[in-house]
Amino acid sequence: MVSRVIPVDPFDLVLFGATGDLAHRKILPGLFHRFVVGQMPDTARIIGTARSAISADEFRATVRTAILEQAGEEAEQDDVLNTFLSRIDYVAVNATGPEGWDDLASRLRPDTVRAFYLSVAPSLFSEIASRLHSGGLATADSRIVVEKPFGRDLQSARELNAGLRACFDEHQIYRIDHYLGKETVQNLMALRFANSLFEPLWNSTHIDHVQVTVSESIGIEGREAYYDKSGAMRDMVQNHLVQLLCLTAMEPPSKFTPNAVRDEKVKVIEALDPVPDGDIARGQYRADTGDDSYLDHVGDPDSRTESFVAMKVRVANWRWSGTPFYLRTGKKLRARESEIAVVFRDPPHTIFPNVGHLRGNVLVIRLQPDEGITLRTTIKDPGPGGLRLKEVSLDMSFAEALGADNRPQDAYERLVMDVIRGDQTLFMRGDEVEAAWTWADPIISAWEERTDRPAPYDAGSSGPEDALMLMHRDGRRWRQIGE
Image (cartoon, rainbow, N blue to C red; front, side, top):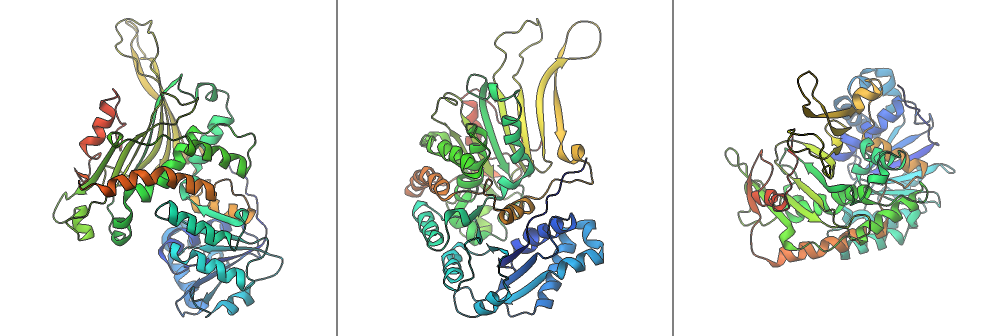
């Protein structure tokens, strides 16, 4: 099975922060994959920028190394890689000063889509946007792409949005949440809105609860300074988990257009009830061996920053009244895993004697590490001698369903091509970001006013006991991480 590749228009992509980690791990290898499959036109160009005073050839050498590390067998074809590298240029630019901007402007072509990707700290967003605008680099058809974090609270998010909107219209601003670019996340919309099987059951009458889990097996090594000022709530819940909740809970849009989809997502965020303190569990991982705890990593024995959050969230609308959403994310957990589990209600009555309790169906949308969809069903256990029931899973893995020659795209591959196409469906709108902070700010403020510490939990576990009790008191259980 081979997917259809639709080439994009010729473009100039200017990558600010081109010598950084994200550019070398994700963005540039993703662009190389799109080049290999024929989606990038021959006239497409990538212009890297950073403060480093290096030559274009030196920059291409670092890009070659990054692609060889990340792109696998595709990068081993020297002629293909060399052709891709020939489309790459580099200009040293001072984001906060005048150096390099005129040189960058001279490299940009008229009548070509211009995309400015800001893989830099949010503190530079407004400055760069202003220089692009005042220097005439940004045209009416240009796009500007920004990475999270989109502020650390509502006020800072509003300031970031105001700085961007002073130089670009909202339809030119692309706020990336890479979770929305995952193939399985997009398939959640297809599953709901392109199949008559699920949508009639997608409500509180038939769904008992929903679990959204994003667990990581690694700690915060390498991100200590950033993470200790943010924590799991700012780093993961306010953006990634809320976005997954929105796609699960949203009403069907009137049509599949960027604003129609995002309108429905905003409605979900605005319908979120305030979360009482008793419906939240916070945790901080402790050492499994030696000096390997969260406190060791940040070098602050008094840190009260959470590395784990679990919470019970209610969507106050007609569709979801009485059906809670349980969100959970953390560092140093049992396995790296991201999934949405839709747990349907138990059968109201069983006609089968002596078979024990029949659990409801569970639809699991797996985002990582193995993207796919699983539906847990109950069937008869094969064999004579009475009727015995057992649970089995109808399992669809994208790797198996699409074949080895048609791997799912990395999220950045899809999202960068959507920027060039001018498709904002999978990007967050400014009011969406601010609505999420409006909901999250009171939770964070309540924690900051208290003096208690997050509950400790063992590295390699499923989190603190408080998180387990959050479900147990409702007569429910978390799905096992790493099953």
